Length: 621
Image (cartoon, rainbow, N blue to C red; front, side):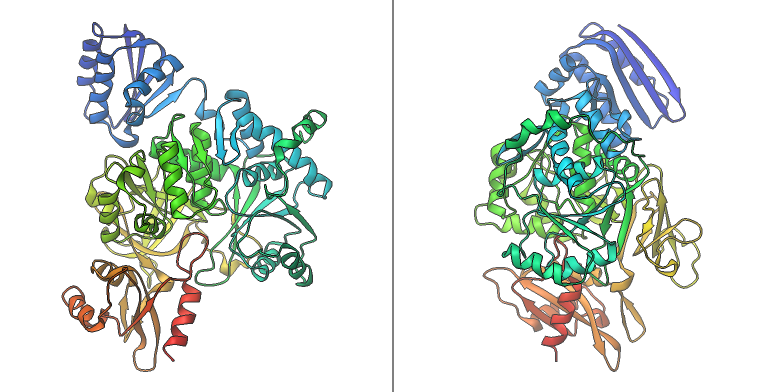
């Protein structure tokens, strides 16, 4: 066996040629031992390696011990050698890139070209699975072409603003690619919207075509669409993508006649997707993104998750949300892993799917995980196949994360931070300690810059000092659609002002303190709701909590805690206040407690703060 080492900056490439077996593995061990201490990353190139034995696997494992997380990977792995890794389960702990699917070719492509490249590289690989069966990349190309023909006949062309709205489904993905083939703008809407909500966002986004799947508010389809037509919004075409109306697979014969249509070139950095901010604290804004933004962000997620083409992901995160789109759909697409769509998002259905299909990835927001664990049929065995969960979308408290780790002991939890405007910003890695997981949202990802600025002076904060989080980098949005310059969150130096509060510690980890808009100012004292939520969450009686500020004539604002009580428990306000006095300063202890059976929720899994606050104010009258 020949070993070639090449050093570039702080990264070392080790190329192996021949056989890595019992006889030759000591040579590799010797070379690994000689890696200089300044080397931070190691990449093994297996292009010319034709065999690896158990002894060789052991040496790779030893190196993985030294270089955890994204600090080590193995590239150009043949299918034969990949199968050896998979047989031993080492494909789950060592990041592998196969020669069959060259990841690096995807980063500068439009979504249209990305799909074509997937079909070229792995046409028969299973990409999506729903209750109808499996869909390969070739299937996705064929059916999206058929849908694109129908959309074109409805007047959709380059530059048309098209709403895509519906629960996660294969048809949603097919329609997304169909819109991209036409060079149109896909405007992704929350499937929980009412007709009035859709009309409002359609007006904000100048949307003319509405592609809709299953929507909880659309119980009466005719009445829903009639309300939209009468609203005065710009929508003029309504196109169902619901599978229960017609199965797209029955139309496969239509493909041959149109297979060479829609060949116009689309630039990778052309704005082609609009995500709408949740509106949890105000009016939604349209976030303009390109394929370059999304695919490069997904590539970062794919690497940090150590996804492989053997992984199976149960996707419940909504595809209209940046987390679901990037860490869900496109990170898995780049890796070549398989996405499973549950038929509904009831916790029993999700438990059954993960258990049956042995899903290895399951990303979630805290509220979804809590609901899953609280399901009467939940057992640790049903989720024993899951090896990684990224917690994002909303901050989890220390008590919640400890509960997750107790109930999913085989799962590796990762914390992440991002926004519709830019995601991911930071993510934890496999090498991070429990303390890092519990107290931080990881380190800023490669090629992303993070600054912390003082709220009053705008000056850069010292390490460990909290202020507003500012970010910039390759996956930053273009800007907000048709929003006046004063309301654009990007400043004259190209920094996005996130509206989130936090600090960077001495190791470079990012800590979140809360939302600038959620800051409670009581008698001149700045109070972060997250600190109070963490204290309340640690109480045995509490299932979930949201802390908000309510008006006070004397103090300006008072603290109000909205509580969901655990089943079988009773809430004693005075006893809770006594316990909180041991953890919080007196002025931080809530003046009001409001008990809820369920919180109003957004489709993203976040609590709808606007609706909750409105309800609380009514209750406190």
